[in-house]
Length: 186
Image 1 (cartoon, rainbow, N blue to C red):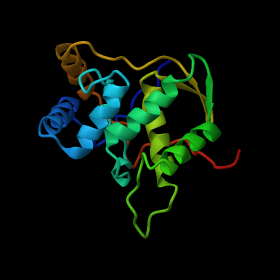
Image 2 (cartoon, rainbow, N blue to C red):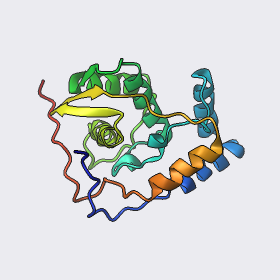
Image 3 (spheres, one colour):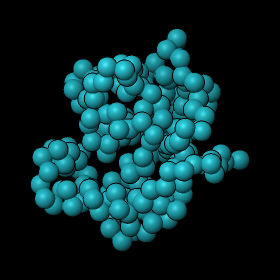
C-alpha cells in the first residue's frame, strides 16, 4: 500500500508558481539560472521538460546555497544513471554528495551553529520525496532501489496541468514529519 503524505503538514506550495518564477528568472538572464540552463542544454534537456519532482521543496533546502533545482537535478540525474532495480546504498549516496562538494557543484551556507553534514541530511530528505513519487523505493534503512526515470515533458500545457495536480498535495516535510534516521556507520 502506498505511504500517504502526512496530513499534519502546514507547508503548502504552489508548484505552478515555482515554475513561473523559474521561467521568469531565466527570461531575465539571472546568471545562476543561465548557468543551470547551459547544463540542462548539454544534457539535451530544458526548463520546460524538467521533471515535477525538481519543484517539490524539502524542509531544509534553504541551507544549500546552490539553486534548489540544480542540486535536485544532479541527484535525480545520478539516480537515473543507475539501471532499474539497482540498489543505491547510503555509502554510494554519501560518496556522490562528497563528489559534488569537492567539484563545488553544491555549496552550503556557512553558519556557525549548523553542523557540516547538513547537505547530506537535505539529500536524504529529497530521497524521501523521490520515494513518495515512486522514482526510488526504500527497501530497508539506508538502501533504495531505482524504480523508474522521472517523467520529462514535451509540452508546457501538459507540464502545467501536472504541476496544478501536484500542487494540491501537501509537502511531506515539516517539523512533525518523521525522517528515517540515517547513520554514518556502514
